[in-house]
Length: 168
Image 1: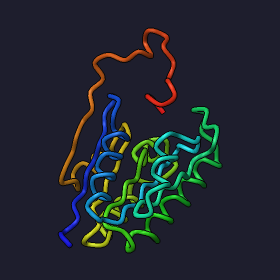
Image 2 (image 1 turned 90 degrees about the vertical axis):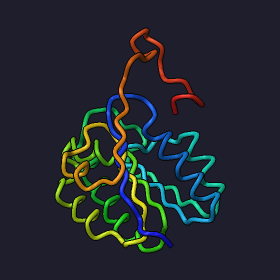
Image 3 (image 1 turned 30 degrees about the horizontal axis):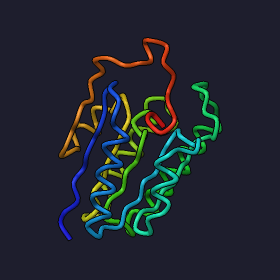
């Protein structure tokens, strides 16, 4: 196995999770064992239903089922459990995605230094992807790949709500 690198997908544009999902599918299709952990998110989603059908992909959500953008102590507890799970599971996988972990840090559900410690001490062969808006400078500095998604236009600003199968 090759040396695992670090990816950061950040910015206000749409597509960070989708890019991480694409990489996960590519890796699984090439025989890699993958773990996709969603922070913040707990609502059933299309990707969850599909990825659970692939034995080489472990998909876990660590957020509240009805996250309402009003952070609670429960959100912090769930995020901390998610990070502990990532640390415990990391040695079993070739690719791990920590989806929306940047947001979990931004909302102070997790300490930046705790995630930095995980990044620095990850198994050498683990390819690690961190997604979400507001990526801390420390993550960007440690990363080998950094992609910034820029919002140019979005249907939300025309009062078009998120559509099942397209946006979630």
